[in-house]
Length: 187
Image 1: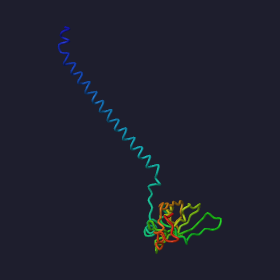
Image 2: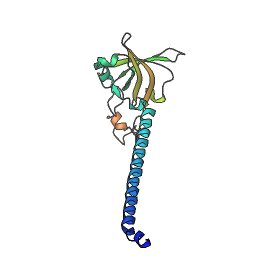
Image 3: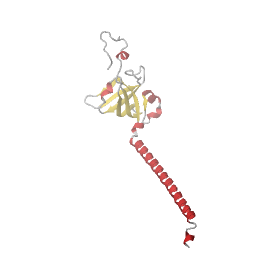
Image 4: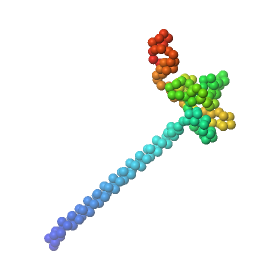
């Protein structure tokens, strides 16, 4: 009888071992699939948190001429408008934080407004940024347009700093480098 028990053990053992190996492989695949799904869910959650944390940074800005030409932007929605300050238009009452000014289109690397560009009236209550009056700065107003008064009411002012080096000759082409009164470099 004992010999009968051991006559077919290799077939039974091999079948048993094969079933164990199959279960182990399928278990490994299932663990691997779980890990892939978990990593995917975590990556999606992190991406959503980054997106939700910075909603204001996804808001683009339009130029003054784009704003004035598109009446769909005049509906009171919050948006950003970029341009340069019309220095002759700035008004502020003494002792007041309320100011009114006009913004027009700006050419890159050229101080001031584009000659003949249209301007948009704007108002702001608060302290103005340091570089607000710099002719090389680009000003970005964040706020909404009041169609009845025709004034862009600004909630926030951003000033893009001018490049670190502005050539004196580009600003004043009449000055010859090395001549009396000409300085080296820019500002």
